[in-house]
Length: 307
Image: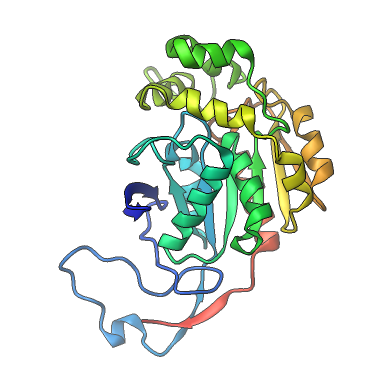
């Protein structure tokens, strides 16, 4: 799905189901997008006059040098189990046009503009790594736009090592080597490596190689400079879950302890046998953590007439 955000084309993955625009409330409206030239359903076929529950919206925010595809295993399942899924490519990433934004604040503002463009009033914000800082910042500054927050692979502060910052600026291939090695619990995975020619380890590197040159340095700079995390964390009022991985060398579980202590009522979950890229290394465990938390805090369904 492609939309315009601030006049720039933005790509959105919706989990293999047409996204339903939101008119108001906590989820999506009853009018589904249709192929150009197709006829609208009749009053009989659409069930005009009947009421149906509106699924709550979920916004997936990827991390540095990544795109929507890191969420495939979780977002697609949720789209087919009662949630309206939005997984954008951030500006300058993946299939989205424009250039990367230079700060966490700017990225959080852009995500709110994305929701505005879709007429989504509130969503659960699920962010990984850099995306977790975006969700954190937005949850504090735009409280009414979030009904729950899930921060995966997060840290406070999210400092990037000098060696990695230098490589991101001057030698991206070297930076990709370091990130790929430090983001995974190992090289060979099951079921992540079910047969010859398929490797989640190599897929992660190839995903980074597909991004436009220079994006990594901008993303890492935004994470490294973000200094408002503690203040934002104390201001959060929505239900919040922190998800860490036991073998994460990029943002180890202890790096999230400050966030856990600062966010009122925050819960935590540890994913076993996984590194920073836990969504691909342990997709089912991550999906269960997300859905268990969201199902427990899911807003009461809003009932709307069918179109």
